[in-house]
Structures are given as C-alpha cells and as structure tokens.
Amino acid sequence: MSHQIPLETPLINRRRLLERFLQYVQIESTANPAAHDYPSSHGQLRLGEQVLRDLQAWALEDVHQDENGLVWGTIPATDGGGSATIALIAHLDTSPEAPGGNVQPQVIENYAGGDILLPNGTSIRQDDTPELTDLIGSTLITTSGDTLLGGDDKTREAIIVELAAHLMEHPHLPHGPIRLLFTCDEEIGHGTDKIDLEKLDATVAYTIDGGGAGQLDVETFSADAAQVTFRGRNIHPAIAKDRMINAVRAAAFFIEQLPRTTLAPETTDGRDGFIHPHGISAGVGEATVQLLLRSFETDELEEMAERLRNTLATTEREFPGLRGELTIHRQYRNFREGLGRLPAAVELAEQAFQNLGRPCTKAIIRGGTDGSQLTEKGLPTPNLSSGQHNIHALTEFACLDEMIAASEHLVELLRLWSEQSKS
Image 1 (tube, rainbow, N blue to C red):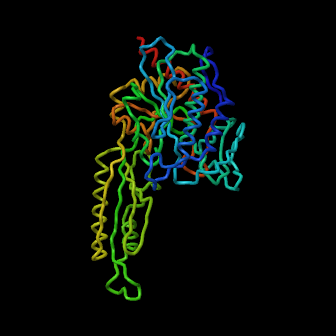
Image 2 (cartoon, rainbow, N blue to C red):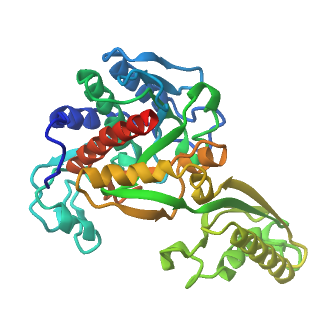
Image 3 (cartoon, rainbow, N blue to C red):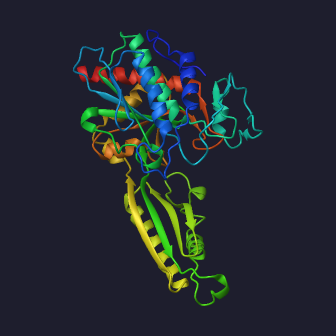
C-alpha cells in the first residue's frame, strides 16, 4: 500500500508506531459498566500512566494525568502563534462486550490475501471482511482470536502519541497549539463526563476513531438507552396456580413482540435505525431488559420510545397483575448540525486528503463517538479513520499502513489549520 506525501515531509516512524501499538494493546483497559467509580476499571489508569510517560519523553507542555484519570498534554505551536488551537482526543478504555485481557497480538507482514488463520483455530474470513481485498501487501495486527485487539481505541492512542513524537522531532513542520486528551469510559457512555472544555480551550477537535482509511465521519446516530422493568409475583411453583406472575416469561414475551426483520441491528444498515435489546437480568419476581434506541433522526427516537410503551402495555394485558416500568435515558445526538456551525472542521479535513492525493469518503457512523457529545456541547468534533477493522469482535484487527496514513493526514490537516489562521 503506497501513500503520496509531499517530498519535504519526513516519514512517520513505522517501527516505533507499531511497537507503541503492540505495547498499548497488551495493557488491559476494559470498561466496567457495573462499576460506580470513574474510571470504571484500574486498567485505564495503568494505560493512561504509560501514555503519560510516552508523552513526557518528548518534552511536551503541561503533560499530566488528572484526578479523574484523564491524560492531558500540549504540543507547542511552531508557526509563531496566533493559530487556532486544535484538540486530538482518544479514549483509554476498550469495549466490555468481549474479553480484553491477556491480549496476544499477532503481526502479519505483507498480507498475501485470503482468510487469516488465528492461533486459536478460528479465522478472519475474507468473505465476511471484504476490505481485506484492499489490504493485500499491508501489515495487519490481529489477536489469538480469544480476545479483542483493543484497536478501538488503541490505534488512535498510538497514532496521537506517535504524532506528538514526530512533530517534536521535526519542529519545522508548521502547526498551531495542539491539545492532546485521553479520556476514560467512552465505551460505556461516559467519555466526555470529566472533560473541562474551558481547560481544553480548543477551536475544533478531532477524534480518530473510525475504521479503514480515508474516512471522514460527518454524521452519527442519535441515541437513547431504555430500561424496562417487570415486577411479577413469586411463589413456590408447587402452589403457583392462579397466583404466580412470572416476570421471566413477561420479559421474554416483551422481547418477542419487538420487530426482528426491521428495526433490528442484525437486519438493518445504512440510514436505518433500530431497537436493540442487549441485556436481560431476570427472576420470577422481577426482570429487567436493557435496550438501545438508535436513529439518525432525533424525532424517530420518540417514535421508538412510543413503540416500547405500547409493547409494555400489551405485555401487561397479557400477564394480569404484572407491573411494568419504562425509563428512557438520553445518550447523544447526531453531530451533523453542530459541525455545520464550523464548516472548516470538515472542509480542511477533506482538503488534507486531497493534498495528499488520497480519496476521502464522507461517511455516517452507525454509532457514536465522544465527538457526538462534544459537538453538542459546542466543540465541533468530526471523526477520522484510524485503521480499525471488525471493531468489538474477536476477529478485530488493525492495519499499520492505515495508521501511518492517518498520522500523515493529521500532519497535513494541522498545517492547513495553521495556514488558514494566518490568512
């Protein structure tokens, strides 16, 4: 895989970027949705401490880990000052939906094509992963097949830290002040909870949390979380006739009434939203169902909530005496409109791809990023690709060549912001 970059621009240190990434993925930092602390897992603090040491090695300004575990740093401007401050944001945690400890990364140099056999006997099948066709000749990183790789978000962490090293090694590269911020618990919806926007003091921010290469995410889902609680009546099954109200059966009935051929993640794509029951805890006396509501249009979330209310009412009629309760929790909103308040956030990212001679795809995310909430809070934050693939799956892998491309794109993007600020 070749990349066109200006001749005067020094190359990203390929070996150092790979070694940094391999080190990060071996530090377990899985978020814990059941915890009440912030961060929700000690591993995030450990990973943050390593990132902190790596940044301190390059004499950045104001490098510290705060009382919430967030890691901060500033790359000083090289363009004489007066330029917009750009923030680059990553999250330290990985998804709790699959094992994230004892990661054993496997490096595949010069991928030859076809299925990738993993050490545990499973495979990353090319039929299921069509982007592998475009990665022949690249360096890929997988796991043994028993754990996540943690590419979400450790590709981004490695890219940002290596970018900092690259810019400090080459002070002739023009850019304004760059704020670096590594947050916690993004995967469980708390990635922006502890961000002090006044302290960040940025004009625009970028998350580098997308898949593949050359992707510029300009829309995300709008999202709510729902919980339905069913309260039945428990009694010994030997004397249960006409007395027991089984909350387990009620929860199962409720889920069965939800659409499966439409409005389900396993049967939708593109701009279609969904209702996703993703967790259940149940006993005869009480059962709880957790659901995700997702749509690109915020008003459709209310339609989904109304569907849940109607389904709950149907369930209560089916199980006389059952008491049900539905709660809806707002999560994040599509950052489409917020990005429109600063068109340069997207335009300069597109221009940087064009200057490098690389294709750019403006895309939508069937999910959200920290940028969704940050944009809503007033800091426009588009999302860029970082070489992640099969995100949150045991077949997850990363592409080193695409990570390098993401780093090169950031160098050019930062130059463009500096140039615009001076014009």
